[in-house]
Length: 341
Image 1 (cartoon, one colour):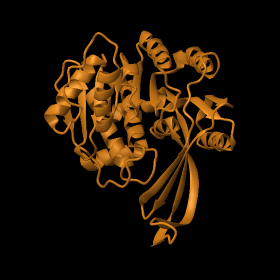
Image 2 (cartoon, one colour):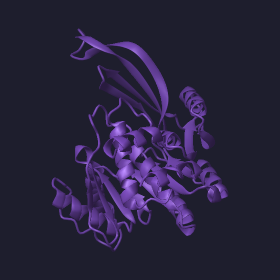
Image 3 (tube, rainbow, N blue to C red):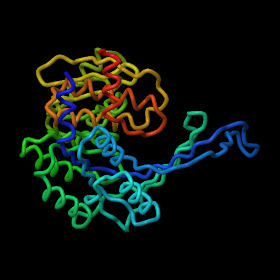
């Protein structure tokens, strides 16, 4: 069933636009508590850099065999140079990555000991780009190359790049060409996403969406959901159906951690998909794997149910690893083979 879909992955070119982040991992061990404060002392064994945020979505797509074009901005600082080197090292197409001297590169440091994340340190300055500089360069680049893309993923980490204007531009351009646009919504920007093909929030993000839409919406439409606490299947099904209709989506895929996923489609009953995770080590990067596999599968001709099942395999693999690690097509095929020998 899946082989025909996977065989088309290498023929697809996916645009990824969003907040590009430099991730640094420090790995070590803990054997004592600091005498200076009640915190663990981590003895560093190794450290490394890797592209994160929207770049990790691009790496997942590359691992699945697709052609990828990454579009976004990074700073001109030392971290920006490291990030550019890492993108080149990973053989990602960086023609759509623009340098912005006004903002520092978004930079996250994770300290890990005994396979547990001890602390995360973030450095960022959130600011919208001016309409006539970086944003205009992004728009021109996408418009110039629109015919080469089969689908677009908007990876919104809430760092300032993704604005209603940019989402409207991308959505209008791609939907006019009858191409797929999906969004991985990390923040309360759900009002931006009306009319995209699909979004893939986790449960907390779906709850935040309900709360945010009720507070900020200026639309004459109302979101008829009476609670933003989705504690049981009935509430999840009702909220998912209402969000699907309110945002005028073709599909909504809510990830539920150990409870799997719930897929909502126009005119169909909600579909529960059981998790395939063997053991949960770290949920970092799971959303990136899900949106990548889901979008690429749709672009390859999968039904939304098939795409959700493949995305479920991808997410289950990633949360069994430490850190934001890209999933590969061979790993998914191995899991499918084990479950359907």
